[in-house]
Length: 328
Image 1 (cartoon, rainbow, N blue to C red):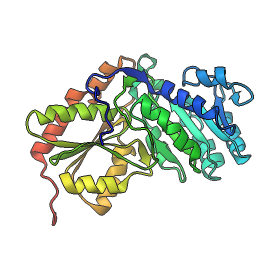
Image 2: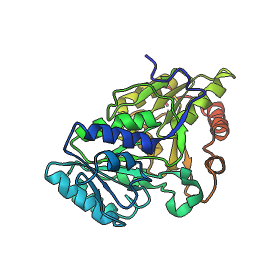
Image 3: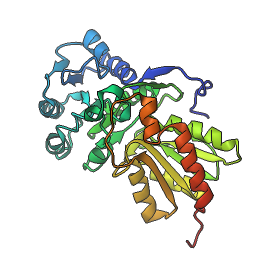
């Protein structure tokens, strides 16, 4: 059964942070353990509905104090609450990583970190607010689950799975509106979703890049290059079985992410394949650079994350790199 909406090629747009906020509010109405915390950014991170419909004492505003945000959340988790603590990704985990490491991960407290404005799509706010290193920071932490939804539907559906999970969770959300293209309801942590079948190359995406890869696959198919497309909303724990299966099928892997490729999603895939199935891998993402002010189209084009740039890179990769064969 397809997990794509019928109109995925001409989709509506919605910001994932608002989809996530709706899911959190809906869940909180039926689960009194759910609490939400903000570091002076409730509206911006999509918690506005929660504030209006649930409110105090289950909404806690800590002010501009991200280190306090996560330590308070850890204490609430230790007392049996299910805290969702939100800020901008550049501030959390950017400013409070040590507190996340020590008070949350070391104690394996089930705090849910909800961090918006991740990636280049922060736009005019520029380099200081474009968090590109968070995947590397968070997937290196023991016990931490790392998530990156592809649209607002999936972000909404993630909430229940996160609340039920006994581990610390981190979800990265973009600022801008993105296409609504996924149709499944039951989100499972650790599962990848196969969106398109092909045997020439496998395109593995996470977050905003999954939709880009679907569009790339359509362009490649016009010239007879058939690509499999897999979506990885869970970066850690990564779906090893899905990666190995599609690698065996296609023999060449391309990953794409809206963040630094050093230590990111592509690195996680390459680490696995280097040990278990040494097929060639092309990692697409930000190449050891900071962002800057600009529209999302301008920034994605500059950093090679627009559909046309990705398509050229994939086409070149397929033409010059042979697929893996046993005995390489």
